[in-house]
Image 1 (cartoon, rainbow, N blue to C red):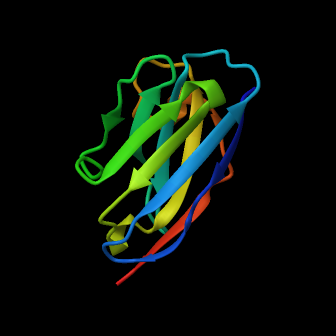
Image 2 (image 1 turned 180 degrees about the horizontal axis):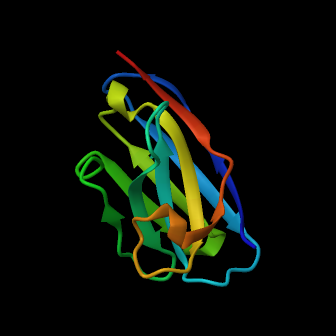
Amino acid sequence: QVRLVESGGGLVQTGGSLRLSCAASGRTFGRDTMAWFRQAPGKEREFVAAISLSYDSPYYADTAKGRFTIARDQSKNTVYLQMNSLKPEDTAVYYCAADLVRDSVVFGEGYKSWGQGTQVTVSS
């Protein structure tokens, strides 16, 4: 199973930026896509962005397009999520996911490995 360690969350004001990191280690059984999801209090977990470690082919949720950038460092098995122009509605626990075993990247059920989550709070 893949072990995922996230970092980079914190408190930021509206309009600010944060960069999340997710380092992966261990054996994967699925595809090498890594993704970010988030879950706000009282809401369902939602897809944010995904990228393949082998191919630079990012995919974003509509809420992330134009503000968030997902990138990967293949040599470090690490994925980053650069978040700019943050809004209070971006406040959530952000989770890294890996070891994709389904065709779609947007459904959390398709990932076998998850990080512990990192809190992002955007103040108004």
